[in-house]
Length: 408
Ligand code: HEC
Image (cartoon, rainbow, N blue to C red):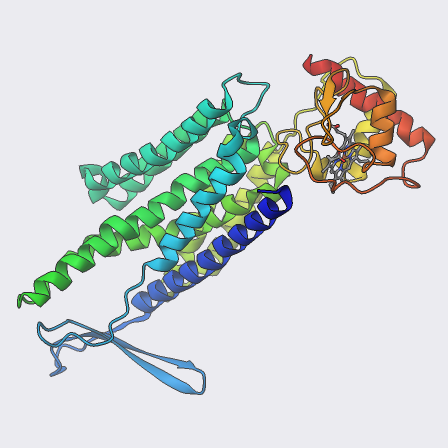
């Protein structure tokens, strides 16, 4: 496939993934909201199959919703099931992982920490996704899962352990995505195994004339509440490529754990507003507390701790203030080539030739980026002609030289 086609395919895939996720999560949040707001049937209500009801104003009318026990032989038609939004989200997400990362597993790794091969790194990521589901599911099937707080604590310890493990191999961006993909897989597997499984079970029983076993839905409902509470952390982690401050910090693992705990707490507090008057104040307290803790932890490691000249330090500041760092991230070469370790090496170009990375090449890359395009990248870098004058160029070159020598 030509690279333009591949790029368009990746765009479509990403869009489908986000659209499916919005549809799924929107529904899922609405269903949980309806469960929480459902007005339970009064004891003296003659309608014994009524479980609860709810009125919602929308579109010029009132939806009068009832939650009911189903009767064998009187199953409403059509009856809507909800699963494809979830499956589509997972399938498109997994395909994205394959296309963007597994094709070249080295994009996941932090080359300063590991020299695992690309396929081995991709394999580690896949294994974590599969094993993660098994461990999570076992925790909640075990006695630990009987007590909500114990189960939640065990799950958190597992997440923190996984983050610590992957943090030793993956770059920050890949680490956050890995944990997000693991938790997102729990969500879809919960739908596939528990929620759909139990719905099939009681619908099959109904079809064979047995009464509606409401207890079968219990486990499904507790899993759907898990999904509900991990929605915010998963969304955050899926968006985290845009938060390099967090994932490029050398404290990325504790930051990740704080984000997850705080966002689960926020969702929990939002749901508690029916019975807890201090819910909003507590949400503010959680957000302020978590933000303060993270601000204290944010520390982007300087590329070269010592031996740097003033020009190089000036260049580093320019590298940040001119926006170079937004594309050329230290931990990732997803958007643009990693410049750490580049100076002094040989760079493969898109036209198939090679070039020695020296001052002249760097200078040309900055002023006339389209002249020589690095292999494997889109010619997406804007020209800095007229923005980077000679003194700035000197400083930038000094900086790029200083981070070049450090890795070799
Ligand atoms: C909008 C994103 C973006 C910004 C901002 C950006 N770059 Fe780039 N840069 C790229 C891309 C994409 C490439 C690879 C394509 C190419 O070689 O033109 C690249 C290539 C380079 C290269 C050649 C790397 C190689 O491996 O051959 C250098 C050097 C470079 N950029 C330096 C800079 C500096 C310095 C700045 C800030 C003044 C900067 N870039 C800003 C996206 C960006």
